[in-house]
Image 1 (tube, rainbow over the protein chains, first blue to last red):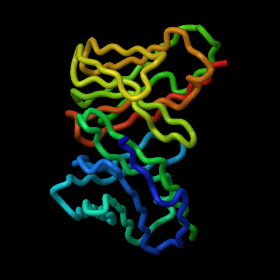
Image 2: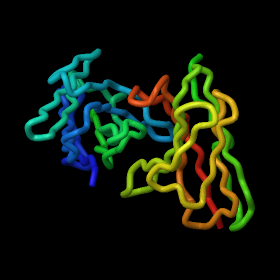
Image 3: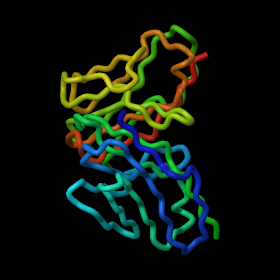
Image 4: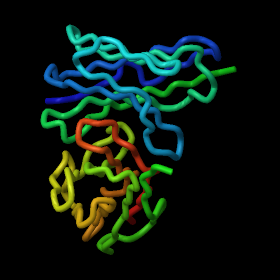
Length: 112
Length: 112
């Protein structure tokens, strides 16, 4: 069935380092992917998205890479800051495009 | 400010007592959705709505009802709540399906 998973449940980095959060997806027909950030007590917050006709997309301090050959998605955060500490989810669209299917999340901890 | 507003944010109630969680968005979005978030299971879709008067089941619809009489509102109804519906609930909206969804800050329900 369709599923989205993350390789690591936790990631700890030092302030200023670059962070890479990985995600594997199983549905080769998925054509839309999103990264969300969830802070404690809040709802998921949109970070960046990418459609399947792209391999890379950049935002402010963030880059998403999509490798359709191996069905892999990654989020790179440059110069990680303590405020980046949160749970990060990748999500893919369902077959009908009517729902996002979320992975289980990676907790990013940034120490000063 | 563009936002998705859920009420209540917290509720403790008893089995069988009907409750409604309201969701309202001020972005004129056509698509709205409800998710529940449980430890180890991630975010799972309950119901969604493509537009006014158009609703459909997500992955875990049992025990829930929704309605979409107006574009801005999408209430979640638990007719006879049970303890297995204790969870953190999120409402989300987007302009259309397959677009970044904006999430509310969540409603934590405890059913005793």
